[in-house]
Image (cartoon, rainbow, N blue to C red; front, side, top):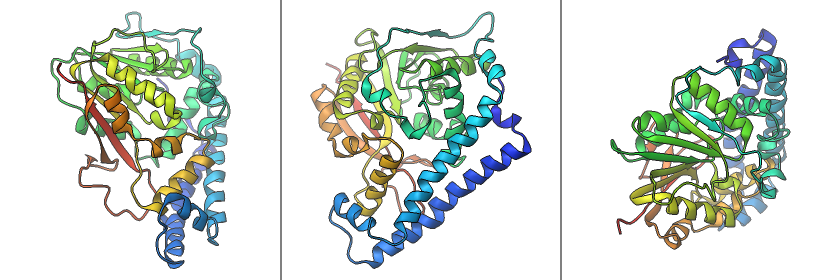
Length: 358
């Protein structure tokens, strides 16, 4: 398949590089300066709300917050124009599939999209991810820049599958909830080559792109349009149920329902594992994550940070639930903690639980 980035003109490449450089300097230069100004104002705040209040009084904060919002808008404008300029070719390749596909795509146009999913342009992407086939291409290219090019080749997701998920040579079914355009599902097919790998998502555009890219790579993955809270799959049929960066996009009740569905799907002894974000315990650091979410049209981040998800897992009948810090740079799961990092970064963590044998 065509990788849009390989098709960029010099002007387009320059705009992409500018947005990327701006985002990097915001993370590794402006954020540390903001942190230093915060520390100079007195002892650390006791909680996130106290840290947010102090943040808003810092002289650098208006620049810090404005720069984040502006570079995100510049990102979507830049990649959106690149995609729209190739619209006909990109739409066509979604249907240019092998005569004998290895996987399949099952769309369900009757799928009801909940208001909490459609009411926001998540990540302030115009039209969000579900509105048009081209929106999937926009999000795929934009996500590379948002992750500072460090997730190229699905690096984060491969680290997750390799370090957080169990080795199960005999696994027969693995399900990925909220699979998007397939960046999280593809590594699962490599990790569990003998298993039936299923990716589920609300958004038909993302699933079309995921299916086309998987077939182009010869990956046997089954993509299904549906609701991760009620997949319709058989109870007790899955060895592993995963999701990456999906729970923080849901209100608390939807998270609870998703965990309950994961528990229903698992075989006895099966593993549920979600790559997500978790409070670090540093009020300043966690306050900047709350603020990021508000500027980025992700209104349920606070629900996730406030939730006791190990308790939710226990209510769903899962055992051994807990969070483990995750280092997206190289280590994957990192039980000893996130460590000292000067730059702004997401507080990645893995929520894991197990279905009892009996």
